Length: 391
Image 1 (tube, rainbow, N blue to C red):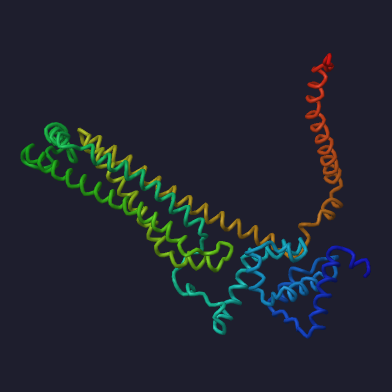
Image 2: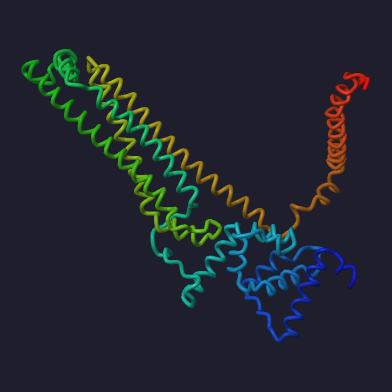
């Protein structure tokens, strides 16, 4: 055994070769690596200045029975590859599997294999499906359920605030004052001949809109609460292993239609709840001028809500693009970014500053450790000599 074989990496490679030789001696032929896996190992296992790393990784794959690139990716989703491969190479492998370009190459490989083998065929490929995690679906369902329950309580309270006595007061007071106040075009009574006809029309229209909108909003909110609870339970019933991405995606893809329907129902419920509150507010107004101001404020708040939702969606998309860019950057096979020698040799002042910071950090740690040990010494010194018992 030479010096190369005494290192950790060399010893592991030496052991893998010994296992392969034992298998061959026993008449067991090791499977050959697929072309896709071979290309992947050459791209991410060839480290500069570390000869034999590709051979070691290839030997590990043969001994562990990992022949296909899909097997290696599935293993990376379930465990840390550093338990099998060198740490630096394992980090490269895991970053590569998160890279959008490598993911695109693997998807291309799966699509080509789908026509020949059922293993790579996904039942949801040609159907509408979302790419989300089960945690995201559960969080959205839980949040929608809580918000819908709160808004349902608010709408029911608003609906119950208009009793029979309140409607009588509205017909005798607020409706009369509003009919007698000038509206659009400075006309009174909304174009009716008498105030009584205007009051009857205004009272009937207000009652119809108030009851119908609040009832519709309450039913939508109740349905959203129940539907979000059912969907939250339903996604956990298949008992998919969350460390297996195919099983997680199978559950998410199956419930993608229901999840989209939940989002639509929640948006409609919010719109109905806001409209119901607006109807309650307009029943408390005396003049059309105040009604116009309140309607304008409601339109502004509604526009802000819509713009805020669009803004958040844009930020989510940008955050996802940033994550993809970081994954692509982390999956680079070269060591230019990870090599600190080139940077420190090129900038001697930064190198000196870096050395001073590291040394100062060590001194600060020693001083902090000394300060924490001093109080105990003081306590021991203040306690004074121990008294000896006469016995």
